[in-house]
Image (cartoon, rainbow, N blue to C red; front, top):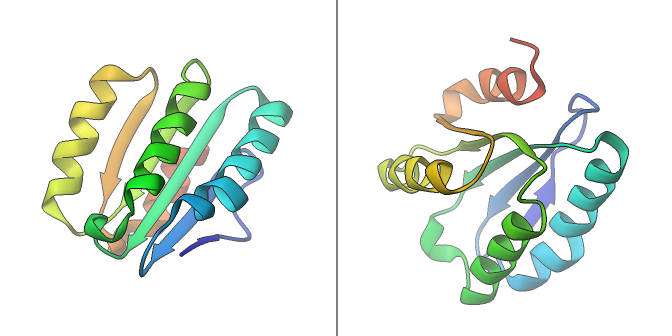
Length: 122
């Protein structure tokens, strides 16, 4: 399940993933919220907090995540993934070579640093 993180700076969106993450999570929550931010700011500052394993993302969720990335290819500015899984950093490092913008992984204990970095408040 994905829920939107509230009370973030106005120039960013953030989500928390828990338990199983499905295609519907992206279709109904992530994509409309991202679209609204991009329409308002013409840029995408994005944070995803993983309180679940990446193994809990369904194939449909991965597909929708990829669509989100491609649809906003030129809009990515900063994206942070908050996770303590080592494989997430490796994946993010590879992804950051393929997509414009800056991408970083933060540990859970550094979630506020992730917010500050994504929003440009650091």
